[in-house]
Every structure is written in C-alpha cells, then in structure tokens.
Amino acid sequence: MVQACVAAGDLTDSQATRLKDGAECAAHRSDITLSDYDGQLDTSTVEAVFSDEKLERLSPSRLKGYAKCGFAYFMNRGLGLDAPDDISTEPDTLDIGDVVHETLERFFSRLQTTPGEPVDLSDYDFEMLEMQLLTAALDAEAELDLSYDSPFYTTWKSHLLAGLATPAENDHYDASTTGQPAPESEHSRRDRGFFLRFLEEEYSNDSELHPAWFETPVGFDHDTPTFELPLPDGTTATISGVIDRIDITQDVTSEPASVFDYKTGSTNLKRTVEGVEFQLPLYAIAATHGIATTTDQPSAAITVDAHFYDIDVPNGVSRKGPLSERVGDGPADPSYEAFLEDLTPRRVHQIDEAIRNGAFHPSVLGPREAGCKYCDYSDVCDVRHHDRYDLIEHIDEENATAYVADRSREIAVEDRLPGVVMHEWVGR
Ligand code: SF4
Image (cartoon, rainbow, N blue to C red; front, side, top):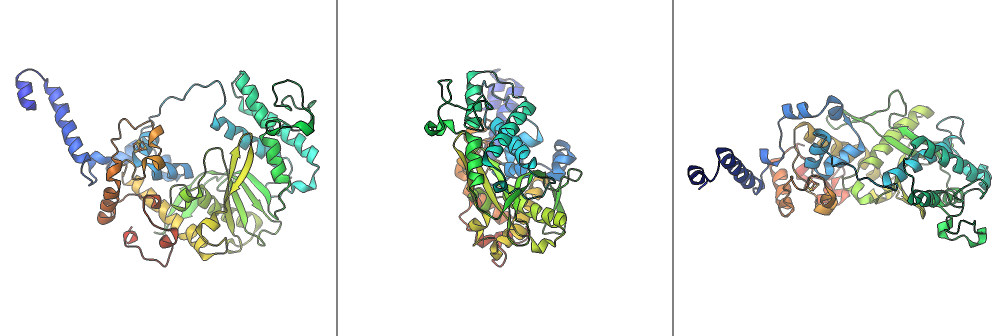
C-alpha cells in the first residue's frame, strides 16, 4: 500500500521509508523479546557514548538512575539530553538541600578539632549552639550565593531561621507577618524554624552515638575520594559519593556506628531493601572501611548501620531506619551482614554489567516507581508497562544481561540472601 502511494505521488520515497521503519519498530516494540528496538546497544556504541569516567565510576545516584529506568539513564547520563531547568523566583528542594548540607557541615565541624572527633552537643550551652547554628546558616547562604530577591525568599529564610538566637542577632527571628518579634511564650510552629527544631531534636537525643564526620567522600580522603567495592567475580567497582554524616561512639568498637543521608524529598527504606536505591548500604560499607582505617581497628570489629534523615522545612527532622531493622533483626543479625557484603555487591555488579553491555530498555518498574509522570523522555521511550511482567519473565528465561530490581517482583529480601538458591541468580 505504501508503494502504491509512492507510485501515485502521494508519498515521497523518504516518507515511505519513515513509514516502513516506524511500522517495523512498532512491530518489534509490541513483542516482549529484547531487540535493537528496545535500547539494546552493542559495546562499541556504549564506549563511544559514555566517557571512561562514566563507565568506571558508579555513584549511588547513577545506580539508582539505572535501576529505575535504563532508557532514561542512557538519554540523561549517556547522551546528556536534559529538559531546561524551570525558572523560579523562590528556592526549590535542591536549594533547601544545599543550604541544609552546607550549614550542618559548618556547624558540626566548627565544634571539633579534627574530622572523626565525636561532637557531643550536651557539652555546650543551648543558647551558644543557637548562635553557632545561625552563623553557620548565614555563612552557608553567603557561600551558595542564591540569586533570589523576592518576598518568597524572605519567607523561605524565616522558615529556616525563625526562633534562633535573639531578635537582635537574627533578622529572621520572628516568622510572623507583623514585623514585630513575638514573645517566646507565643511562638507558633511557624515561629520556630527548621534549624531551631533540628537543634532541639539533636540536643535532646540521649544516644551514645555522636556526629563525627560530615560531607565526607566515600574514600574518607579528599585525595582518594572513591571507594573500591569488592564484586562477586573478584573485581571491584569504583564507587563515588559523599556521606552526609557519620555518628560513632568514643570507642568505635563498642556500638554500631550509623551513617545518615539527609533527604529533602520522599524517603522509603523499602526501595533500598528492594534494590532501587543504594546510598545507605554503599555508605555503610564505605564507612566500615573508613572508620576502621582512621581509627586503626580491624574492619571486622566495626559495624555500621544506616538511616535516612528526613529534612522537612520548617517542621523539623525525623530519622527513618535503621536499615538493619528493615533487612533483619538489627545490626548484629547475619542477614544484615549478608545484605551489605553479598546482596548489595551482586546488585551493583549486575547494573555495572548491564550498562557495559548496552542494556537500556525502558523501565520494568511500574510507572509510579519509575517516575514516568515527570520524565523528560516519556514522549519518546514508548514504554509498555502492561508488558513488563512478560518482559521480566523473558529476561529471566534468557538469562539476559539486565538489571531487574526486586521491587518489580514479589520477592522478600530474605529470599535473596545467601543460603537461598534462586534459579534466576544462577550464572549471573
Ligand atoms: S517515561 Fe518511564 S519508562 Fe519512559 S523513559 Fe521515562 S522513566 Fe523510562
């Protein structure tokens, strides 16, 4: 029929070619087998598109990006195609994250003489800490040089700073709209900003663990910022990333330490357990080695647990975790050790191999998990979510080089830990 249209002069040759190519592509895409039409590239194309650095270094955010959707990963990390940023007159969650990270690093590190020295806030007057925190926040804001100048920005700063120190020292002491400082007894939730709530939470925490490292690279050394993660085949993966905070006891062998990852967005430990997010386990593994090295202890004597630290401006903070209790019965449970030392390296290895082998098919997670609604590539990926279970079955049957997060499957984490033989693991 297309040829008849060409013969009749209704279509040009190039239009006919595009129609035929489109029909062929649609036919392959409707099939659940993986083909060149499903983002399957050869290794020479992968090497031409990705720089050595991008192939050699894996960060938790890269691993998560790939685990959510190979196609989006290729478009974003490989081809570098991004939608332009929205223009905003007020700070967004990234700005909030930057200010909070910068401020807390300054605040805590100014209370220690060397990195790794535990900071016990109860050694200080609360009022003195308020002033320190206010100074750290103002310094951080100046350093970040946020280019906003609007009433929204003023309100936003009040949400962070209200109630800290005194009205004379803090221009944003009172978050009310009257312009007059309210008496302390009348302070509303709005009049106690995020940093004051954070300080109250930290000051009243009677844990034996105290913050000791802040914004530290996973290699624990600014000259060697990366960490080599041992993989199941005897090789290693180079992991990059920055650990927001590590809390320890004075004697690091007496209690499990904890890594914290500050989060301004939604957190869900299940995504970590089910192989979509990687910060907490990778940071716990890296911190184990880093603490052991810097304190001259054997790695086997160090245990590290992990938490998310939810940043909710202005309402305060909350800890999510520990990870060990979502995996097993706490940090001493062998399941947790197996999760860190066996399952996490296996997952990283699968992703590393899938990227190097050019597996960039659209997501096999559900649309909500993959974030399809807000994806810049949704007009071009032609994902077929209704076929995803058939595609996963095909990947398993063919033992195809691909990564399928356990979040896509109905499988409990304990079924993935050593001692349980799962047929789809064999040979991978
Ligand atoms: S819309 Fe969903 S499946 Fe398609 S590229 Fe984006 S994340 Fe991947």
